[in-house]
Image 1 (cartoon, rainbow, N blue to C red):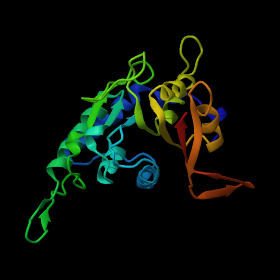
Image 2 (cartoon, rainbow, N blue to C red):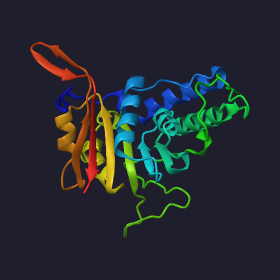
Image 3 (cartoon, rainbow, N blue to C red):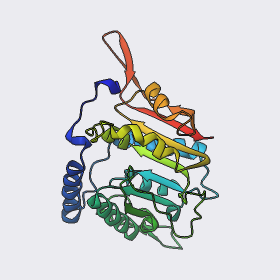
Image 4 (spheres, rainbow, N blue to C red):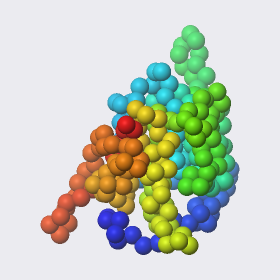
Length: 260
């Protein structure tokens, strides 16, 4: 879908997402349902695979997810070998953060305890797959468009502005939601300021990886690869194509950018 066709929607409001995560938090506490995986498990797997190919797990990189929701992408990265104590998920919905923290604790408690002789172990499946040390992940409330991202414990803050910088910054659907928000009092769309906010938190030589359902690859390149952000196009993740009315396209676009 072209960004020119996007109209303001409830999906671009904080009230909507507060309601979504309030419900998902209640469901998790009641029946252990971790909530929806936005864009499906395929998107998580593709983003994790890209990270493994481009961002080594050793030495452990600093990873930030903007709009982490229930934390499913960071949990997957943790399972893939990235150090949980180096990963930080932020969301402007307080209940999203509560949900992610609760899931992290449940996954850590469910980590299998191995028998040293047999190699066998028991795993608590009540809250999905166990993830070792998942409770070491950090989730915090932050309105990314208006607030600076905090630093992890022991993390050095670089630059004169005292901004925390990250080796890998992730977005899975967050830019899409922001693009559906109403314009502010000055007539500016919130999405217009998002790319520059992203660029300022990516470490030189670091990466920004985004998956979108509302923007094409070319549109994402135009938005994020420019002098204002300091980002340049690095690579893209292939998705199956479809054809309709003589035109072809993708359901999702996943594009990576590198900070100069």
